[in-house]
Length: 125
Image: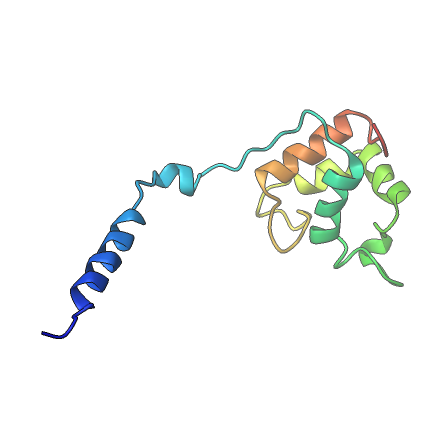
């Protein structure tokens, strides 16, 4: 009788398939909250990416919106120190002065900016 490797291959494939099963906890795989650590906020790794992502589309170039350029640290620091930064990002969704105009910042972004402003808007720690 000829050698029939098919049952052996099926057993091997079944064993591999079963060994690949795992018990995954959905809340661990897809957490609802992303950790937001604001204990050690630094301008360049924490604040600048928010500004680049959500502000520079309008507040850069040769004619920045409202005449407010936010391309240099000193410009961003100035609106942090004078209160304008937190005032504009913490307005109601219905307020036309809410920045950015395409929708509010995330809670973590707001907490990050607040922590930086509350520390006096330093460039470096």
